[in-house]
Length: 160
Ligand code: HEM
Ligand SMILES: *[C@@H]1O[C@H](CO)[C@@H](O)[C@H](O)[C@H]1NC(C)=O
Image (cartoon, rainbow, N blue to C red; front, side):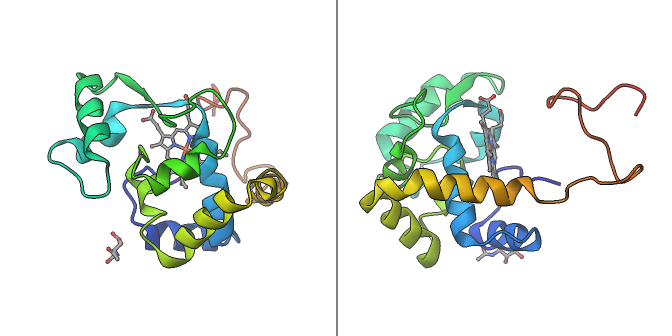
């Protein structure tokens, strides 16, 4: 089970905790969304009416870009192809694409981690590495029949 993108911040924190990851890991790992794109399906629930957690100009821009559910939009509107802390400065400016991104700036503790990362960008890369190692140790398959290790990340293996 992985979060789908509609969860509130309490649910995200609980889900991460159930895997041994804390609030800092949640915030830091969410910065994966500094690159890549999302289908519009994942944000349609934010577009129907202006969303107070979304910058209004950004909301208008997204409404224009999202003509169809399968249209794609950048996760990081500022520097979509660069691995940097713009993901966090976006959150401060209500420019988070997914509602789960915006949600990180609505909780006291997670918002404090966002602000801390922005004020000390040099800490980001080492913390990202540490949190990725923790993520990599979640539910590691060690025996037959525990689950499958995908040969292609995008789909279940044939004959599974
Ligand atoms: C905090 C919980 C997370 C949620 C709720 C979440 C949710 C999502 C959603 C809804 C999308 C867009 C899917 C679509 O409609 O196309 C997405 C894309 C993406 N996510 Fe996450 N995600 C989370 C954490 C992570 C983490 C920890 C990583 C990296 C380790 C990550 C890396 C990515 C990448 C790279 C993309 C873009 C994929 C592409 O461009 O094809 N996400 N995520
Ligand atoms: C978050 O979502 C869960 C599950 O849908 C719900 O039980 C809870 O009341 C929600 N919490 C807040 C603060 O909205």
